[in-house]
Image 1: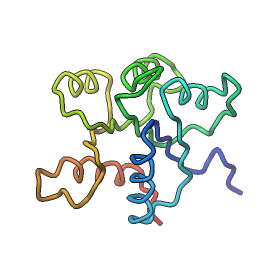
Image 2: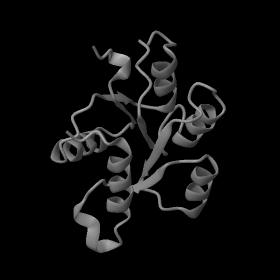
Image 3: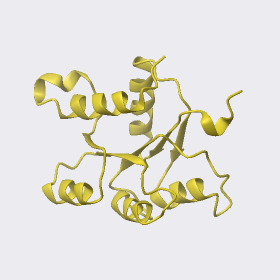
Image 4: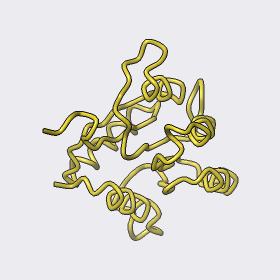
Length: 147
């Protein structure tokens, strides 16, 4: 019998409702039906992962999709904390951002991200450089959650 802790899941850390809906739509389109936990900023995500601040602790996700630009605690700040925490150091983290700044990319690479996805998340942008497609394809391959 599978417990909830054994079930694959995704943690989406994103403050923009349109981006949350976009991720949900893309996952549905590709038959990824695992639980999607949503945190609105880095602080809320940390509370969910650790079960702090009145938040119920979620099972450790297989993948974290992390926006860089958020209030309270941005994506890079959260990533630094996760990488220094023995419980979460090995999490597969994908950065999702509208920013294609080299400094953001380098900082994310220093923090051992699994991938870098430029928003808006879309498979239709394949002909325009393919960054979204490559990053999200890698994300889906890593998850291996398609039924």
